[in-house]
Length: 289
Length: 119
Image (cartoon, rainbow over all chains, first blue to last red; front, side):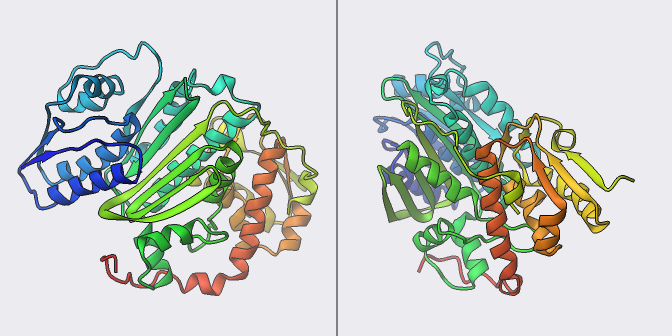
């Protein structure tokens, strides 16, 4: 089959378009998908991560994928971040150092994520960030990644990609999986047929967690949200039919027209932030427990 | 064996990152037997620069399901944690106390999933 990919921005519409691709390719088995970019006017580099999550499901069913007719500008971006090298395109040097490359990390090799951040966050605005901000940002990314490892139930790995916008002083990192999605986990936990939107809302509310058994949970997402509120950054979460965005202090939950089978978290940090993230706290080790 | 034992996180996780639940579990598995023996345990985060909640939930949070709060307060101490990490640990500890206070409800969880369609 041929799928004509439209413009993909890092927004609700972009995730819906990727969901449409997933739905169209779903019946394919031991077949061929031609992903045709001729109608794609723009592609936000970080969206390579959720696109790869969609394509991983397609490839998992013994399908061959060909990426064709990629407009020159988009081809440059997706060769620079390494996404297109999986589809027989040669790599291209990132001479501006604004790319956070595409990577697929299998759950058994989760340690690679630390190496990835160490290598690729350098020089992406973090030296300009205020004291402590780089640390909290990295913590937030590890929280999101660990959530994928713990909750997604995926066999296909975790997909990461990002982009630094030096003029805008924004750095986007996107972490995607082709797992069960937040809705399934919350439904299993609550035993009620909760919608995708309500499932995301539930997961973001204190002190909710779908974790059971010996290890508590439910702090990571809230930690990330508190950080983004202070930093005036942005969070986007797309999972199944739910889309969530938190930016400029405003939360929006909306239902997507298509089903994104998995979970994507895009974290955008404001690298111009001058606030200190070093706490002046009365907490001491003696009054923690 | 001395009554006070220092557990160095860096030696268990093998680096400056405490960012996985598995590593947290390994730290927990060192701490819990010592607390069970009534030893005072000092968990040292010296040389560890990135800590996340999933690690702390496994390493320390789950102790609240195994030991009374008073015993943890009496026997457990952390050191070499910067204030931001202490604040995260406090959040994890408070969350763990709530989590285990509602344990029966959590144990009943994991019901059959109710369908895979949206509505």
